[in-house]
Length: 111
Length: 117
Image (cartoon, rainbow over all chains, first blue to last red; front, side, top):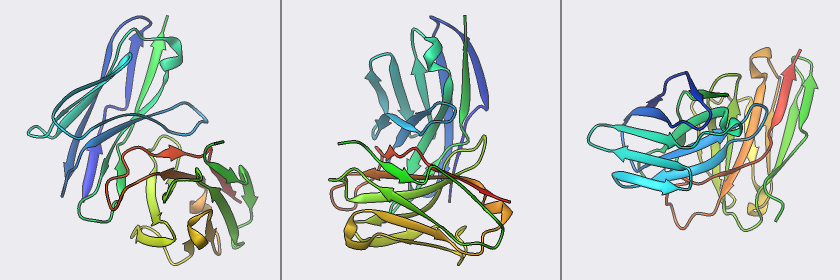
């Protein structure tokens, strides 16, 4: 089976940096995705880590450590529009891919 | 390309009625997923298709749920004899996947919000 745990809420100040963690337990593991979802909106893909290390995409970076079963999403230069829920997600094992989403972290950016 | 579309956006039905939702994926995408999401939770996998083949179905999905993707294009999700516990947002996503690689980048539709009274 799979489970991906995240902190439920994080609050950060506009312009600051925030890290959203994801710890996972999976029977098979092939990488970690991150999605953003604004209230009332659909999830939007942000990044994917297939290998250990840091992936950078503009203000967002994502990190993966397979040995620690851990990853994080780093948001820099926070803007008010970054207030949203963030989900990590992992594909399943084997040839048929069920994607499991994490519990989600609600980020509130304050002035 | 206009992205993934879903219809209807909202559905209110009485308990015991059947409902059907439609998803139109991005045209060149070969993989299509259905998820259910309740307030404060992440999307929960229901089923997915590779072209027209339904390759996996969640064990959480009762026999009241069925999905189809004829001709590998649009997909429908039907819920029979709806129950109040079926009230949720039903999300569809699509991706372009080579072979049986991992659908790590999925494009989601706006969802259909189902309310069962």
